[in-house]
Length: 515
Ligand code: GAP
Image (tube, rainbow, N blue to C red; front, side, top):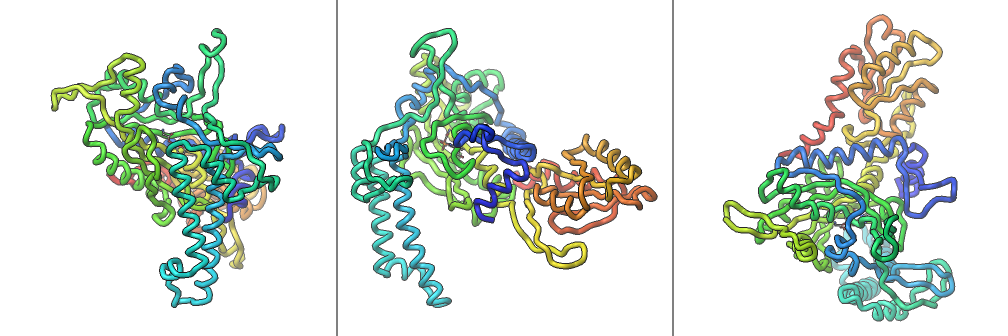
């Protein structure tokens, strides 16, 4: 399915709505509908239980969105959480300078790719991609130019050389995508934190920020958790919560939002052992993605070109979204930067006494950080499929189906009386629903022909449909239909709960990650 179809399916079936739609929407802010909130809660539960329940040495917290403003000074966000911004003088549109340049590089790559595809078609089996890429003059020129620009941009970003970014935009003759104008302002730094004001203090003193990452709530609670949980290094603190960033470029649906949710875990380790744990968490996180059904070919590691000031190693797990491979999760070796900065600014010792080494130290940190909304987008874009299936009369028809892992499907079992105008059927079906609703997320549906109701459940990814027919009244059995195999079988009513639980319980998914 292409990106447009995914976005419209998400709206049509109550997964995601644009915020404040009746007022023409608010850009880069989205709401989750009835099926969306179930799926999102299931993704969060999967993450939480895989981190906190599966690891005896990881505990959770839920810290406030508002934090003391000094937090953001210590973390470096006040001084360095910036994007380079540029305005077009004619259209008055605002852009990220680095994104304008990256878009230009993407165009060069697309041109090269077009040539490669053309040649692959022409030469067929005999085509040698590597040889073609290194020898074909036009392809070599496109890719050389792209690499040169990438190097220069990386250097300009690293040393915050805003003048060179402007120079690059002028040299490449990049025009405003909206108006075609090349009249640009200078490039300026733009801080991505949203600020607000405390009610009882006027001016700068009362200025607060909406947190741009949940991680700092973990760092400032390090001593509290250490004392109350009696954990020993290595141990982790996990948190799920909202984060806010005033993104300049807001596009690609829920990929880049201004209000989003993060699932972050900070793992505190002995200084010097961080690389071992960095490797461990890279492997562990890939196992998590694979267990939920993301295939190997849709996942890849991408080492950071420029390390942030606090990191001595950093890698992204990229996912093959409908618009290409992009960051889904970050794994960062944050050294002792955060705890040490908070120690310096607060005057509180952020240290751990290691009984084995018999010494105090500020622990080093490995962070895993994944955007819940990006995971949601990866999940629906991979799950949504169109496939040919036989209809009731054995003819080929097309169905749209969400092939979620059964444990995260928004609805686990649909209860469907064969027809709606027979009270003996609907009452029986209602009684089955009333029993099953204590076991799992069910939906009762009696509207429309049974075939249409099956299609509706396929479209939201319901693993099981249970049909109550006239035989049910005699023998207390039902037909249960499997979403993926379309296999239908007759089972006693008393066995429905166990059958559904066997495939849809979250435990099933957690066990698939392995030890
Ligand atoms: N604590 C580290 C941190 O915040 P990050 O790479 O800036 O690192 C981590 O963000 C994850 O949060 C990203 O991998 C992405 O999944 C998600 N994320 C970041 N900005 C986002 C945005 N504007 N909209 C949606 N998700 C976002």
